[in-house]
Image (cartoon, rainbow, N blue to C red):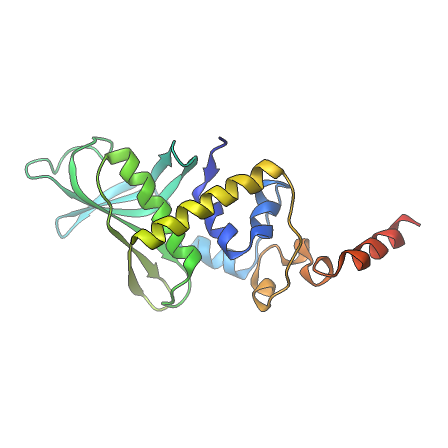
Length: 215
């Protein structure tokens, strides 16, 4: 099983074609949304930790899951230590009594399934690494400066693991699925590469368009 980046799960649930364009064909592009997202992550992307109100904040913590074939990093993990173990390093399994992953997003406080699944995947990685149940996390929305709690319910865990399996199958096929044009397409950084208005047309029209360039 090939290891996949955690962030690709968010892409897949947003649009399978977007995920395939990235992982199968290697496309990357920027727009105002990706730039704003980078700005929001500037502090969280600096590896290290700090202590605030007795809670250790682990920044840019690398995480992985051999079982799910995932790797990536958590923006922030809020770690509460066992009694008398506050000075132990983050890698010390069993040194914490609770872990809470926090994901930074650029927009207003709104719930999106792809954001919640990405956060849940981080929790699954943390559970495998630290042998500790991770019951909830949070998404911090930078524009509204509000935090939204996410409970990792059985339903969310099932959705997340099924999406990971579908993503693995997509990668194994090494094919980019056809586009399905939606209003959200215009906000995608790969909009000009994907060309969803054209590629979402019936196959007969796509073949006719391709023949124009062959003559």
